[in-house]
Length: 255
Image (cartoon, rainbow, N blue to C red):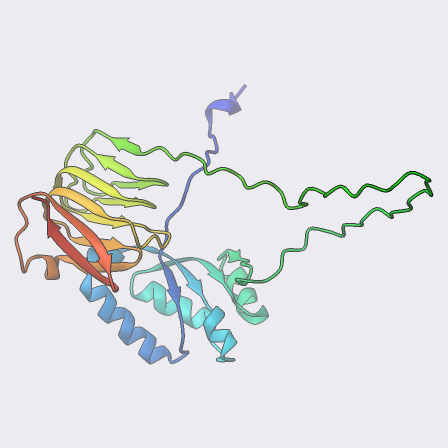
């Protein structure tokens, strides 16, 4: 009899994928812009999963054939893994292509948690003087912030490996070319940083990257990035920090 407990298991994990936001339905312009972006960082975009965001496009009532778009994205090397903000027709096309639909709530939209009825107040007559007592606030007490621990990696990160941290990421070994490290917070590499490093991947613009020797293929903070083509203009063989200032990545030596 087969022991099913040894066949497979499910684990909770965080999956990182770039989001493609479209503002125009001109397929020729989309393809041209995609090629230009890919040429800036071919290794970063190679065989990359992709979530397609059509909210802005549909707000402008610009029609788009989702099947045609998916064929284009696959042709240039992307793998669409999700759609959000699509209309009924686009969602139907996505289902036909076995692409999941991500239902997102518009920012600022109310969350309805059900009807709450206030108890009726029927005070009984009394000969005693009425004392008014201040009622406590009905708002729930604020939840204290949860302490987030850093993720520590002591082994070398080899080519083809991907590391993701939901907090700060600390690496004490080298990061090889072709590897990718990502963190929602800061990234610290106490060794040579090759490959690709992406900090603040959920939009944390205050995140920073620190390393002893910068030889990266790509560095990124909150979506703003520089490729090796830009980085090779200057050699960094000492400790540096990288931070975001006015949507520009600043590389500063640490004395």
